[in-house]
Length: 608
Image (cartoon, rainbow, N blue to C red; front, side):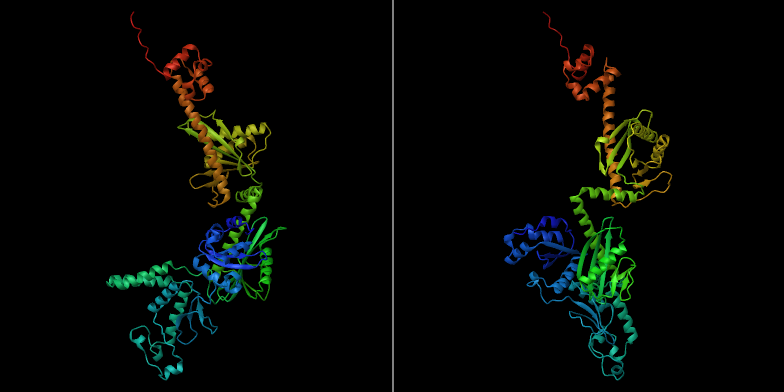
């Protein structure tokens, strides 16, 4: 059995399309496979009944010591990438699965009045090739659309100027039925023909917006002319075109030899991805990790890693696609920072892989050392919120009341980005009457930090006020009275749009909805609301019970307070024994209370 920890490896593999690679103990590549869902496919080798595999597959699984993968956008891209990698590396366990099949290309032939057709052979004769296409059906859809939209020749006649002028050719059936405009007899000029070819090249480059508009126009015209058969035919083509996804992993064959590099980094680590593109296909891909020693810039790290990759893979590419301008100057190299087009797609694919690799690696490290996650979150919060120090101690305030009655304030405390429940506190509002949220906040903040100052406790680095500008201003009043308004950072969070307000700033700060900083703030706010509303409901219930008890004859406010303090709930008062009640009530009050909860009719004694 393999000593390989496949469970740990599977946790790093995403549920995305891509190509996976199996390596043995000597670091040799054994197998390359494709998958619509990488984790499910790789997991099937280890989670399924081994008896259902043939002997070769069982040997393969037993030798696996490492799994690498490359994610792509679509399943078609996975097929194409697998094909090119197998042909490049020819792994041992892929031999029986590999065939000589090549994927189809669309060729614009290098000749006068170019023909357009599909081929499986790419010949360097000056022709322009588009593809390869992973789906033959998609390729034929494009060719059929071109044929029906443009009138091009299909013959292989040598249509040079001399032959045409000498009248060596005659028009054929294709001209008679309207599929060709007869360039063989100079019925169509070469310039008009080349104009059509230029438009077709735009379509083959993925710019099919104009074609879609034309198809919609044909559908509309055919419907108005009641030609429903033609309208239906073009409707089906329109559906296929709109679902068609332009090539992302495999690009125009004109991109013959380029390298692609991208980087993702944080304070401790950098991750660099490398793609090697030859003749429009990716033949090499790898992501490496660099542990920072000093405060190296992304420019320095990317340059170092790029040179290492080029040496390792013996790259001769003169063009390198990079995410930003590099300080490196080399007359033999050309650095490209693409803004759009197929080179931009390659850069985006490289960036997608490096970001995923970074995320998975950091998750692994943080599982082994939880302090790393804490430091990362606190550092991110300090940067996002423009703090002068790490927010290791955060406090959040929230108010609750019911139509102005039973007002309470709650404070929750997070230390090292985690709840510190032993430090949570409630405040019974003493100086505010009626529904006044601002005054309630002012009192709670003053009492909280007055006590901390009196007891010489360390102040938090960040205070969060659940509310908008009004609540924030009220909190600042109390902090100014205490003289600590410059010693802590205070922000308010408005619930509707998750706006963050700073004192004295009329414009809110908006954080990315997926940012960890906003998630921590939301967790604080929600926890403060939960803690406050729980206390508020308890107080309200006690107030309702107290009012009910005071209405009982002989039970006044003082006695009701004693009952609630002693028994805590109405259920316990109802179930209390005479001995238990006697500890709080006199005999008359006890009888009255028992009759209230268990009324009984006194039967008349029979006459003797």
